[in-house]
Each structure stands twice: as structure tokens, then as C-alpha cells.
Amino acid sequence: MKKIAILGSTGSIGTQSVDVALKHGYKVTALTAHSNYKLLEEQARLLGPEKVALHDEKGAAELKTALADTDIKVLSGMDGIIECAADTSADTVINSVVGMAGLKPTLAVINAGKTLALANKESLVAGGQLVMGAAKEKGVAILPVDSEHSAIFQCLEGRPSNKALKKIILTASGGPFFGKTKDEIRNMTAADALRHPNWSMGAKITIDSATMFNKGLELIEAVWLFGVSPDMVDIVVHRESIVHSMVEYDDNSVIAQLGLPDMRIPIQYALTYPERFESPVGEINFAKLGKLTFFEPDYETFRCIDICRNAINKGGLMPSAVNSANEEVNRLFREGRITFGDIPDLILKGAAVAPEKDIFTVEDVCETDALVREAVLSLI
Image (cartoon, rainbow, N blue to C red; front, side, top):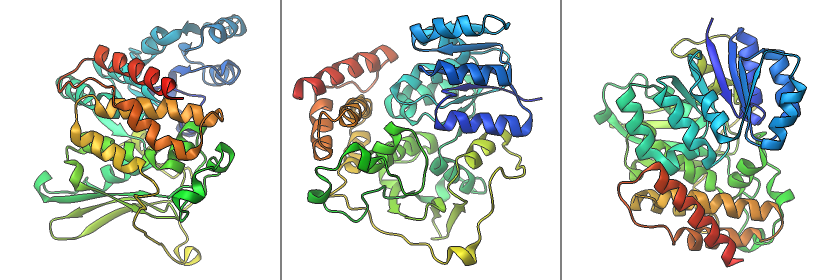
């Protein structure tokens, strides 16, 4: 029986990971969440893990009381999440923690020598140099869970060599504001931005999709995961979200991975790789679908894509800085403290305070994170 741990189990990816684990009868050894102790208690009673962790200390105390009639160990804070990440009894750890908070758990999984099913793209954006270096040193496999990177991973499985790869083509839904001008979206509210046309995701990621910052993050993630230069990653808007990404080889052959827009497909593949099992979702009816459409992104209106591309081209701590700036700006927008049109400029100005370091440590990333967030707050 495969044993897995799920970090961020109460979020969108986490709850779907639980569905996949139940479908295949996997033993879940550890669960973590940020603050939703009630759902975490339900999951713990359903799955019977050895340990659970809640980042929120007050919630963890409530959870410990609630689970007092069980043998489940209840941990708290980042230290508790890291202990679950390094769980010695798990074969594979799914990291679906949201945001930069996922970096330390990612490194803990790798240092423990566990297979990492990675849904936390910020780990690679903020610390790609550290993560990939540690994975290489430990011989740890990183299996992508993001639908786009899972698609690329699958399309690359039959390649003869790295030299044969010409480009990676990331597909983007375009979010809820596709086709609108900069002036039209300037004063859009969080409620408007949270109406994603295809995917059911958490609030932070859905806002990132509306700004298309999410696609910029995925560009940086692809650079690290697949060892390519930023200019080898193209982006195309594909409204139907059926083609999850593509690769183009030197002979101009393009291979794509298609599927319904449901995260349980890439989650399952990361857990069953290299085997393929019965799908947890339906199959595509191409006749009913009728057509697939593709468009060039509007880089002038959705400036966040180029903010991320420029950051990875600059390298060092700049990708980490723009990620931290975005996390803070995203939160401020959801709280109604800034407008949608403010987002790109605040990210740029906040990230500008990052120190220039080509080689850095986890501590450098954390210090830059705090510095950038403080700079963003000072701007409003």
C-alpha cells in the first residue's frame, strides 16, 4: 500500500488529493493545514493519519482537544508542518501549501529523501536554485502536480534527448478578464476577479489567474523543473482549458496533453507515476466540444507575465522578490485596500528593494520576503 502525506490538505488541491487517496486506498500518514481546524479534524477522522499539523497555533490547540479521543499526534506552527513534511513513513509527499510558505516544507521533503509531488509553484519561484540543487544532491524525484507542468512532464516522456526540445508552450485560460482593456479592468473588484471561467481554485490563486501573474509563476517554475532558458517558454491563451500545455521539438512537431479541467487528473498521475489508472473524471467528447481556440496574450493589459519573465531573466533573488510582492499585493486587493489596476506597479516597486545576490540561502529568501512585504505596505 502506497503511503502519502498531504501538506495543505484543506485547500483546493489538498481536498482533491484526499479524494484521489480514498479512490485508490492509499494510506495517508500525515495531514497539514493553515487554519481550517474543523475540516482538518474531519479529514483526520476519515483517514486516520499518524500526525496532523496546523500552522495557526490557536487552531492547533482547538484541534488537539477535538482529537483527544484518538491516537493522532497534533503539531503546530511551521515546525509542525515541517515535521509532517519529513514524515519518515510516507513514500510520497504532496505539497499543496499556498504561497511562499511552501518553500521550507518542500526542502524538508527533499532532505528526508521522499518523492515530492509538487503543487506549490512558489517553492521553485522563490528558491528554485535551492530546491533543484537539493533534489539533485539527494536523488529525489519531483513530480509536478500543476496541470500545466504535469502536461509538459507527460509530453516530454518520449523525448530522445534534451537537445531535441525546441520550446515549451504553456496554455493559459486568460482568466475572467480575457479580452478586456487595461482601462476596463482597472477598477474591477475581488468579487469580479474571483469568477474564473473554468477552474475551481482558492482565492489567492484565482486572483493570480485574473492578473495572469499565475502564468508568470508557471513560466519560472518551468525553467527550473525542465532545465530550459526563459526564452524557450511561450505562453498562449486557450480559453477552453482542454489542452493543458504543449512541447515543440526541433522538427516542429508539437505534442500536447489534453484532458477535462479537473486537478484530480494530474494529482493522480503524480501519485501513480509511471502507471496510469482509471480516471477519477470523465473523458473528453470532442464532437460535443466542437473547437479549441488559441490567442496571443495581451501583454500590455496583463503586465504581470512580463514582470515574472524579467525576474527570472535577472535571476538571483528577483523571482523570490516579485513573488513576495505579489502575495502581499494579492492580499491587499482581496481586502479591498487597492484597485486591480494598482497591482502591477506595486509588485514592481515592492520587489525593487530586493538585494542583489546570485547565490543565496533560505535565510536570504526569508529576509527578502520580509523586506519586500514591508516595502509594499509602505507604498499604500
